[in-house]
Length: 159
Image (cartoon, rainbow, N blue to C red; front, side):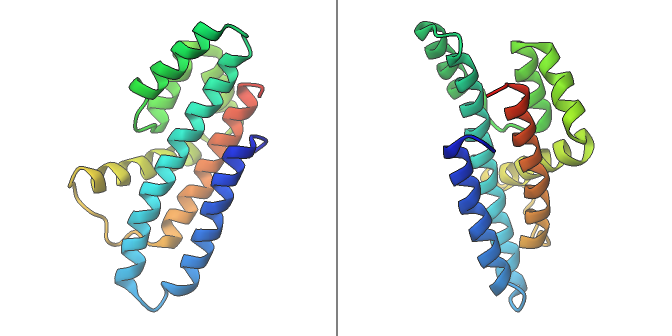
């Protein structure tokens, strides 16, 4: 990831996940609760990162009103960025971006991991079925795959 702000947010999550993995093995309930916490945190970082990359891409046009509109639209309309939502948003900008993104990742594995994280976050946030069997290790595996989506998106947008 070349964007410094996104890299810093991802590095922070990397450190926190590594630290959590050191302490949760003996405490299954804590492992499950931290797994849910990290799903929410990762979902938020992914959403902010995707918005940031799309806004940076719009800034390349050098048209301040267009950039302002893109930032506003993403901030108000782009929520819960599962893979389908991401593809839909990309397609609204340029349909070839979707094809390029899917060519750079495994849509089922990597895109599916992003969608799984967002689903858990929504379950937690909206009182749905909590997956107390989800562990920090499980979330870390999804996160590793979801980061591939962010890296590929940065490449697609040529930032």
